[in-house]
Image (cartoon, rainbow, N blue to C red; front, side):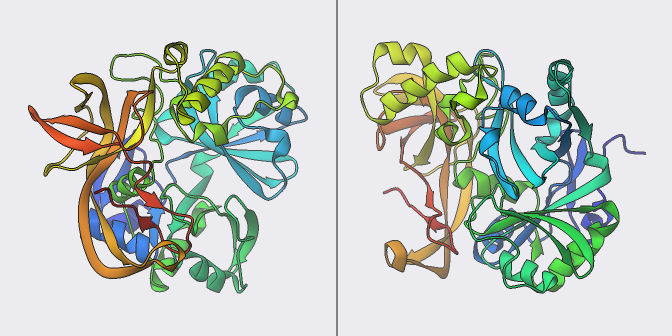
Length: 411
């Protein structure tokens, strides 16, 4: 008998021919027979479905739930309205991340906090002694529910057909709703970790798992595994805990504001009070702004020595995690996530851009490098003992032109 945990969709993955691997103590699909490249591309042009039931799902209930969450999360929970969600980080006292998470308010009297699968037990251990000081409770409902990420340009149409409505949520990202999909109660969030401008995550009861999975496939969605989920999030510069968040390769805590995304996840609103890590985070925020505005100083480097940046290999080769990055002959950091990532070629510019059927691949990824290195700087990556030319672009894609993610290809 396997000691690994399994989601309610385990048999569905086997039936689809998935290659299963150990991921954070869960037996999960890394890919299906079509392969990671095909799964990535299908998500970008149509709709990929991902079993994300391994992610930790925690209900926060009780009179002090807002007060507690304001103290232990970086986001402003007071600003979260009913049927809204927000990206957030669980900080420690030094301004580094215990984990990153998503907070949902489907109902007035409780919040749903979704955390990384491999961190669920650690997060609960971190939060348990703190919640004792508040009149509220944390309930782990991970094994009572399932979650499927429904991502890509056609995802909304598929869910709307199952719900018998025109739109399953309000159009903007982070909107929520509770609907019956052909009689199955479903909690629907306009969220996801693929960078898709149109994408959803749905939560259902365990007994509805295979129904939802199979119906979505009948409507044209295709299953995608952890491999494609990784290349999709990497292409859109979304951090993975353990690579771009947490502790670096030297064992040092990574500042939360090393991430550009931190300015959307961290609030210094007065209503939050003295939340965990507030003082160091405020200093990090000032340093990040200084570097973004190209006025960073040596003092800012003391506070924020490195930042998480996009990186594109210009020479022929493939970058991998841990490869050293050099700037003007000096080692300035390392690659945190990278591989060869497929994309659809495009025609036209800006809002007129459209995806073609022709595809290509590019060696792109994410690096943790000295904070004052400018955008578009030429750098080198040590690929198996050979230094190859690379560049630090602003981003790899544009995802503000729905329904498609448009690649931004470095020259």
